[in-house]
Amino acid sequence: MRFHHFTARVVVAHAEQSGHGQEQTSPRSPVNQFIAVILHCFLMTACGSVSSPPLINAELPLDSAHSDILALMRQAQDSSGSLAVTLYLQAAERFLTEAMFTDAGNALAEITDIDSQSTSQQLQYAILQAKLAMASENYADAEGWLTGTLAAGADNISAAVYYPLLGDVYRQQDQHAQAVRSYAEITASQIFAEDSEVFDHIWQSLQQASDTELQTLAGVAASYELRGWIELQRVLRDSDLSIRSQLDAITQWRRTWSRHSAAARLPQALTLLQAAGNAMPQHLVLILPVQQQSGTSISEGFFSAYYQTLETTSEVPRVTVIDSSAATEVSEMYNQAVAAGADMIIGPLSKALVNQLGQRDSLPVPTLALNYVDSEQQPPTNLYQFGLAPEDEMMQLAELAWQTGHRNVAVLTPDSQDYRRLGNEFSGHWQQRGGQIVSTANFADTTDYSDTIKRLLAIDSSEARAEKILELLPRNSIEFIPRRRQDIDCIFLIANPGQGRQIKPTLSFFFAEDVPVYAMPSIYDGEVNPLNDRDLDGIWFADSPWLLRHSAPLREQVSTNLRVINGPLLRLRALGLDSFRLYARLQLLSEGTISQLPGATGQLTMAEDRSIHRRLHVARFINGEAQEFPDLSANSN
Image 1 (cartoon, helix red, strand yellow):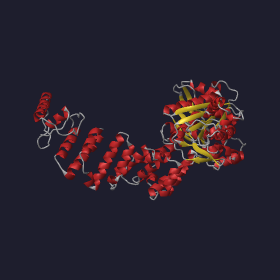
Image 2: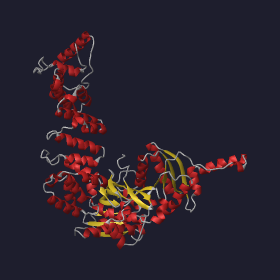
Image 3: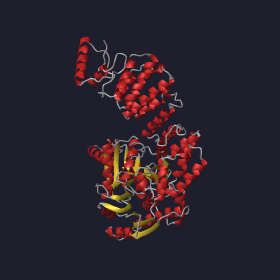
Image 4: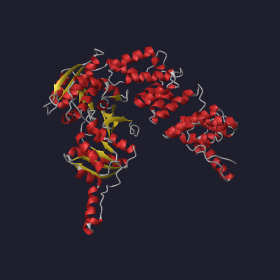
């Protein structure tokens, strides 16, 4: 006799079935249910042995839905061939719907000859296995099921399930171009309802895909549908566009691609863009230290973006500037801005003044501070924080080094409190990641970094050992060659260009020419200077696209018309540019309508506390010029 290890409730469900698989209509009393359980246990004991593993190990409530699943399982057990496979597939799908993943896996495990079944059954099996893998967040296995031989026969009906699922798998693995390609296989179909998420998913994937991914995708795009999606992203990807210009670009795209699915049904993010355009602030107040170079640079960037927008539309806000150059207290300036009728305030820049805003419970109007509060408490309502946080730069550099395979790092920073703190933050993050800090050194402002590099590489220890040996042996008997420590995978460096041009050759002189160096953005001044920067060759760093892309139209225009600046002031000018681009999109970022915004300072995203963070572009010095490279750390989290 053969029994399966169902739980007590499942046994009751069995007891309520007639011999022909039809459920009896008369309900059982609790006493009768208990008797049925006892009788089942007695029968199992009498039979002596149990032969097969459980098909179901979850306790099921006695409702019609679960009874139906059990009926499918019993019917599958009593059947054979293609019919049994169909029934097991149906049961597995029902188990998945009920989030009973172990039972779904058990049902699929009963199918041992799927390779000999029909194409549609093979595809359904692959889809169910992929869903099961996704339930445990095993997306690589899910991709394997959906791209294997069993999933090769998707027809028009099954495609409606297959391609969105494959797109979801790619999206979960940050394979954005592949996700777009999968979703686009089905978006032209009429089977999707108006509330389908596929249109939104395809737009999110397009937004998150890199320029390189989109270029590759465009090169292989053969269908009208896929090419239309790529073109829609292309016309809106330009970070220089104002919201009004983007809306005009969408209108023109819809005329050109009138037969495209998105022409009739735009993704929700683009629909909400229209609402954001109608609700843009009409009066901005800038609180900036305009008598200082930092404030002047931010103001230059802000008004460069302002006048660029004015060239294409008259829909620009009125702007008032309040000078905070000598301010030590923020309340009077802030209240002045509110009294002037500001719809939004941008600034202040000083961390001390931003901290004062951060201590308030709430702010009366949306405020984009150009720095970050020090406190870890929840920021007040309406406070957004945006700045050139070195922590963002340091974290990205650490991830880049880690993804490149380095584990043992030497840290080299200037000898000051702020730089030591940043070096310590890097060390803490690196060790938390599982890496080792094998050496640290700090340097003063000097023209000779030999002693510092010797300490970093343990050359001084090697020389000290040699001196001890020379004290014991005749000097003419020993030829000494110093040796650096061999456990350094790479070097994390904080330095300006002048310091870097001395440090990198010194590293090479002391036998560390082959050790990769990862430097903070301060290593680059934003100028093309191959003659001087050859000494920086090989150094990796991450920086704002505004500094790396000299030929960008707005960068060329601003550089021609405004004063010549470099390095930190160029980055502040980019901060001003982005503050103008952000003012109309803060709500969209806050609500998640858009997940990121390409900016002059980097790819911008917003955290839950409304702080805005940047992902920089990766570059390396080659033949004295900074050349961009793919960011290996982009998908590491």
